[in-house]
Image (cartoon, rainbow over all chains, first blue to last red; front, side):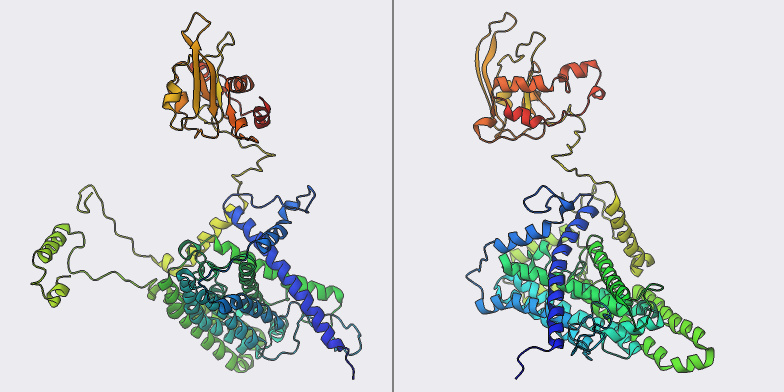
Length: 436
Length: 196
């Protein structure tokens, strides 16, 4: 019996190691980037002291993640006495495991040139689980499981802030999974595949990124990703100012670290999906073509372009954090159900119509003009849908009580109060209700 | 104040216009503001290497000093007005008969507990002879509590150290204002802390 792992298994292990190492490093450095951007936006200088340990070399503060990580790992891991211990300990593991497992189906580059290693199918893709036909489903299923971590953490903490954070998270995630799915469906429809690498190849071959072909889908997906990643302006599950951190209020030490890393992984996942689905993945006009026969330079270039785009999206995420205030919860729900859901449907119908009649368009107008029409139609739908949504959707739920008299008429209030005080037993409940 | 008070003007919130309802114009406005601040001049400084500039040393309330008169004697007449005015009770004066003919008393010892001081400047306001002043020295450090209790000699030495950069305020004001000041001298903390 051959106990040695096959070349394909070894390749998968190497990829997992590289990916997990890269992601953890990325998460650590994104914390630094987040702090830098926060500081720059607020006209401060940001962390710029910590460099190489035990030397005076500062390196613009690039040693900060090491210091931050060591500090939080060495902190006391305190478990309050009132928590549900099993769930409390399981929550950070669930959220981190799910957030990491998502990356099994996410390509982080294109393919390597043929290596010629026996037993290893060439070319080697930048993907842990190559040939996974349900890649998109895998990503969405696991990102839904990651929500369980938030819910478990909030519930097990046995704390009202934690509970409210978990509650908000579940409501928000249920609401925004739908626009997220609708934005995605347009892309799947156009590419004809659930494989993320096929979706990237489709954009590279046509040269039209789906962000240009389906602007409304892009906007809906983008907004929903912000909500899924619980980033401002949709960070209600955490909402430091009102919920003291929300679902991770009761966590400390390394468990808190796991939650925070998972949060950054969510953001990285969201950036990956936005880039892969809508911004062409590794494709850039004039730099990377659609050719499947590539050399080393081209392979590394594609990897670099994908990473660069992802970094750009993440920087946008961080800029948005300092540009807009947090939504109120009713505004959040209004946006999801009354704006994003209809807009997502409009996009889906437009894309479906365009894809259905594309052969007829090409036959009638020729390929060039047909492509132009296929791009113009979704843009028209986008503008029309945007204006209609903007003009006719309420920006929030109006909870103002309907008053029959001037609320500032203090004299009347006082007289009413006095009347009720004087004869409390003579007033029937119906009269009390009527007097309000 | 009652809500019905005629002095109150009640304003209605303006209904959202088309640009606000479409969100995108304000979205871009917010993003451009953030982006502008990303690259704008920073207001903080790399502190120990770069010292913050004190806007106006005349009104800055930093470490205290005891001024000397033209003959080099302490100006203080031990009237206790500063100690009385001090809300933190950090000034301790021991008065004795003055050896000089121009005043009755002078401080035999004069100490300020810089750790208790709240740097409110009331002592400076109270002083009738402009003897105690607050300088623009802003970084005051020490290795022990005792070290942070500044005695008369130390407070006079603060004057000697800062008199060139910050002349006595009564003289400066008489000479015509604040424009004559330069910025604070470099790294005075070590000099202050090291003196005993």
